[in-house]
Image 1 (tube, helix red, strand yellow):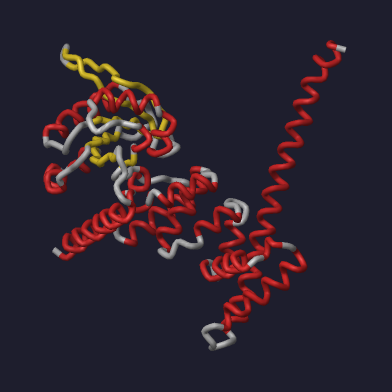
Image 2 (image 1 turned 180 degrees about the vertical axis):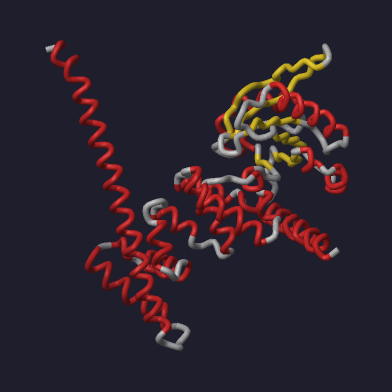
Length: 346
């Protein structure tokens, strides 16, 4: 009997794999059909409502329809669901768009995305969700954490955002502006009011998986306190990562307090060393990310850090009130876009 069980193991595994693959294909097919069904239902509701000029007509239509459908097909066809159907039809008027999305994102994904009013912001979450394969929970968490507003791309002109998202959609090419964020939320580290750079680094390594999730799923951890020797002098890089889609090494330097001008020279030294001794054929130039608890924008602008492939971002270990955070991020976007407009007018 034991011999039979041993011999049947490969057969069992092969059949199990067939069953699992079939289940996945079936789930994708069912989801695709349901998504198209919900869009078509929403389209019919939308067209019916548009025929009337009465403001309260739409709500009456949905309420009446909900009662009839619920009696026939169960509670899954309540008013809220019909509003979702209407919303997806309003958000994506063209059937071809939904047809393309239905096999890539689940109805639950789309249900979260369709309530994002800003078109570019909505496209950002669609493309990032597709490429990083977020679960619905991860998508909701990223929307709640205002990921889009924290990326560099949100502070760029609309034309740049459109072009970067188009490259991501058509070529799966991720630009650094879509990858790096500011600020980074590190509230999960559980740090007290007072801590050292070593405490910060140790906490990150303890919560490395969550740190990578906050950074982005394409980051791969390589080393902590990586020692490099230049002219017989030893230096240590706080954290070294590799980004798969950017195809480059990423140096992360952890700092307490606000950004200081001297940090640029230190980071440049690390990047040029890695460029000379660690970069392999086919990789792009290393990128440096200096994480501080504060930064002075004029310092960063005058130092022209972008030319050195260096980025500076704040990190937050204790999240402030969400409304205040939203105001801060939206103000940062407005200031950045205004500066670009002024620069372009000169």
